[in-house]
Structures are given as structure tokens and as C-alpha cells.
Length: 390
Image (cartoon, rainbow, N blue to C red; front, side):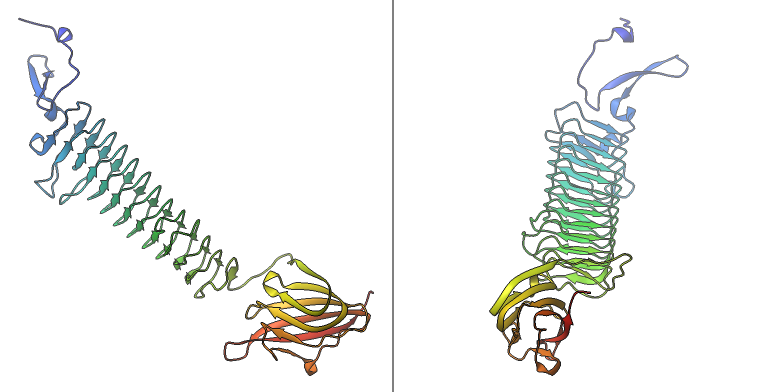
């Protein structure tokens, strides 16, 4: 019985042993071809154990490096495909391998969903959802969500959430949440469950927080720079050969070479040049007399009005090398008896060993904090007298 091809019954499922009719170029003979061969597959090296008929092998199953490597769908894969590649898809949905090779037995997706390996080499995606691996080599993604690597070599992203590694080499992001790394080399981010952590255009750089309290740390365009602090929100910018460590938080290193962060919530730099001008907030101390305490961590410029004798002035929390200035109005003939630094007697030095504020006028004081040679802070104070309106 002769039946036109157009009148053949329609089927919705097939196996790779199913055949389709094919007519030679001269239309002289109608033959059949196995679907596996039709898609240029090496059928003896392809195993499709799923009952789903929505998966596709195209030119898959061939590997010049290992004759035992196969392209495999197993379990409950769905809408998955291997194209021009070698690898394994287990229990995957909406996953694709394109142009990948296992070499000696790599390229595998296990329990993945909406994952992609494109042009990868010996790359593994395990228990991942919406993970991506593009043009990578020896790259592993484990237990990740929304994570991936583009152009990455010998990198590993493990137990991560929304972490990325782009254009990197020898890169590892481990136990990180929302980490990002771009065009870096020999860089590693390990936030251990912390949030954020950015490294952009860096070389031999690392963000490694020992506790998960840190958030939004970053290294930008730096070389041999490390953030290892357990503090939060520190940044290294255009600097190299330095570390933000310990429990430092909120430190910013800008154009620094070879020096480490010292203070919290402080910008550190080697040199600074201002084209226009600088301004600094004044701290108003108000009317004072008797014994007072001045917290130098709150500012560098202070103003006071003497309404009585100052019997004791305690200056606290000065920074080594810091410079502080005081504008003092004396409303009478009041005196300043004693000034100490952090409660230490004989720690402030002035000309003649005394201060003599101008009576019924204004005086200006400049204080510089120095090292006494043993690591102890000492203050050197300069007194400027007899200020009045011009």
C-alpha cells in the first residue's frame, strides 16, 4: 500500500531510534534515517533514560579526549538539550549545554533548573537554579542560586546566592551571598553568609570576612589589596599592597600603597591635593567653667566661652598625629589651670608650661598630637593671643 508522506499519521513522541523518511537529491529513492544520526549524534555514546520526549541532542556525544564520555539525560529532565557538546544532565529542567566538552569526564549538571553551560570545559553545576557558566574552564558551581561565571578559568563558586564571577582567572567565591567579581585575577570573595561584597577590575585581591556581620564591602581597580575585616562597609579604591583587617569598619582606602587601615569610618589616603578649598564643621562648646571634658573624636575645631576659671580640661580620644584647634572667648579675667590628654598628667606641652587666655578678649589654640617615642600620645599646644575685631 502506498501512502503519501503528507497522509502519514502524526506522533508527539519519539526515541533516538525512531526513523524519518528522507529522499535523495535526485528524488529517485526514499529511505529512512535514524533521528540520532539525523542530528549528527554518536548514538552509541548517548544515553537518554528519561521518559520525557522534549529533550534534544544535536551533534552531541563526541569527545576526542575521552572515548568513554557520553552525553546523558537521566531522571526527570525536561526541556533540556545538549548541542555540539559532551556532558551529563541529571534531573534538570530547562537546562542547556552548548559547545561544551568533558575532556576527561567533566561538564555535568545535577538537579539543576534553568541552568546553562556554554562553551565550558570540565565544568560542573550541582543543585543549582538559574546558574550560568559561559566560556569557562575547570569551573564548578555547587548549591548556588542565580549564580554564574562568564569567561572564568579555574574558578569555583560554592554554596552561594546571587554570586557572579566575570572574566576572571583562578577565582573562588565561597559561602557568599550577593557577591560580585569582574575582570579580576587571583581574587577570592568569602563572606560566609554575609551580604554583598564587590570586587571590580582587581588583581590578586580578596574579600574575606570571618563573621557574617559585614555588608557591602568592595575592592575597586586595586592590586594586591585585601579586605579581611569582620566589620562592615569598607572600600579599597585605586590602592595596592594594603589590608583592611581586624574589626575595622567603614574604612575607605583611596590611592594608598603599602599602608593599612587604622580608623573606623575614615578615609585613608597617602597624599591629598585640593583645587578649590576645604571646610570643616565647628563644634560649639558653649559657656564653660570648672572641670570639662572634650571628646576630640567628634571634630577638629571647637569654640568655648569662659564664664569662670577652667580648673581642669580633659581632652579625650585624640588621634595620633591629629591636629585640633580651639577658639576661646574669655568673658572676664578667667584662667585655665590644667589640661590633660586622656587623663594622663603632664601630657600637654605649651610655651612656658602655661596658658594665659586674653582677658576680656579672644585667644586661638592649635594642638598637635605626637608620639613621645614610646607609643604614648603627647600634645603640643600653641597659643595665639589678643585677637580682636578689625
